[in-house]
Length: 143
Length: 143
DNA sequence: CAATATTATATCGCACACGATACAGTGTTA
DNA sequence: TAACACTGTATCGTGTGCGATATAATATTG
Image 1: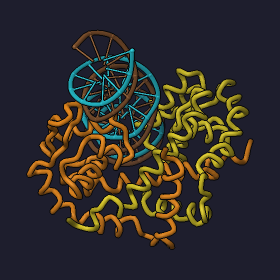
Image 2: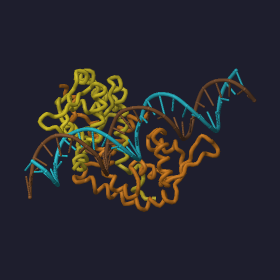
Image 3: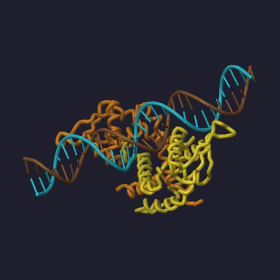
Image 4: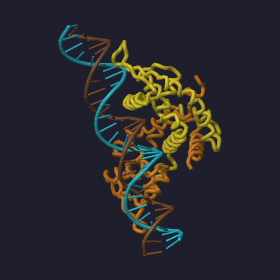
């Protein structure tokens, strides 16, 4: 029995579990809007700046097109976005919000506050340091 | 444009991204062993204590049976574990390591060290506090 | 300008996650 | 002990993630 292989000694397992549980916590808030968590992330990006390329969304979300394209196809079917072929460059796909997608922002604006209250039975001792550590990990691992 | 809806202000997105990137970082280490990351987690648990019920694994990994059962079925097909029906209680399923599953521990023992070196281009400033914050989040969110 | 390389996106296949439901075995109760 | 509730696991359907590959459009090069 190797100590370093104990589940409780794995930072990665905590990261994996925390991420899953947080996503689960979003579910009851997103379900009324008909959104999944990754779809919500796409909308966060588009609410900041509309009419983006698929590649822009990929970069912003750190996801590849093989995840993003089907995600956008489902969102298009749900009437949240429209995908149009690029005019200057025919390889590109431009992603734009529909009225429905745009109006969801109003209904979503309360979610972050709601979540913050949600996951803090015990408040986090030092949120800034926590976020900074996550950023360090992300920057170390993304190419 | 609501400030709280900016992607960069979302702790959850960092958590989600960090978790994905860390899992990705495990891939090249686990692939030679023929394992996925969740399968590796199952083995970590079984290496600590063999012959567990499906429900034990579910509790330990904070996953539901609808995830764990198919996971174990794939691992059984891969010859890593055996699933046997409970004798005392016929509803239970006992999960045991095969020789192959057991012997993988030797090959896996270097992985944690390898990973620690891997994701620390910049070393984390305060790993203990980070782990503690993750535990707080997990404890707040699990029922 | 035709052949080739590159790029942006899409498709395919597989393995999770997870809500919802099914099902078989066990406990309980009238 | 027959009817019913409960429990442990399994199944189903949908939506990601992601490696591998395909496709179409643009850029490059001989």
